[in-house]
Length: 276
Ligand SMILES: [Zn+2]
Image 1 (spheres, rainbow, N blue to C red):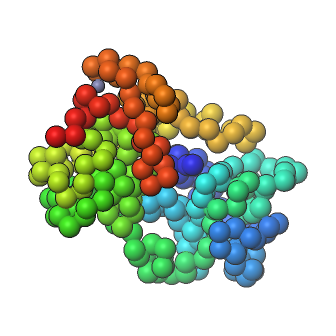
Image 2 (cartoon, rainbow, N blue to C red):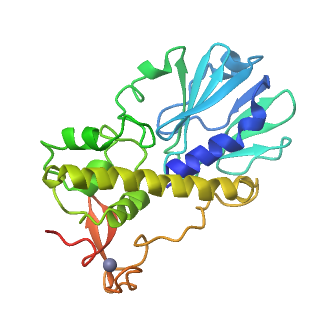
């Protein structure tokens, strides 16, 4: 699943489209997570793309008349093609620009989204419920401490809840908790202020490292032919164990463990991240 760093890298990869004008919008299969609005081809034709921003894992494309929301869902990928190429099976949506360049959404599982948010995107039902961005100042130790006092859920589940903070996906939740030396099954409200401070710092560090890795692999990531893939990164715990055994912890040598939490895999070191 594309996580926040992949989405941010996708946004950066689309920057060459700024100040370009839309020649045509093509909807081949509008049945994504929500239907693609049928009026988009008419709405966007002749409009100029002025800015590309991001909120959580949504890319916001700012046109003359309003904002288009793009979301990659579970398996989506946006390519920037230099010219129109024959679409493949899962290429559901194109924006063709007057320059000939094409923004193309490929999404085999169709959990992605293309939605019109008009002139007040912050009021859109999908955006207005979101918590703060993890890399912004509003997400700090005080905030995390205050907003976990009544949460009995495990801290790993809590930091993946976009109402609390956005963009901390499964990989980065496990990695941040390891780096902060906090057991993923601790209840959120059991964290001390100092632990909240450590966790906030490590969430920011983990995501910043991933963004830096994404920036350096932008060209590979955005090649029109390849698979979306993930940035080549060294993980401390993520993916380093299965049900039966684990690779040695890079810090202490104990075997990494894997458990299930909320239907997702969690990886941790039982020694570095002792429960009490
Ligand atoms: Zn360890």
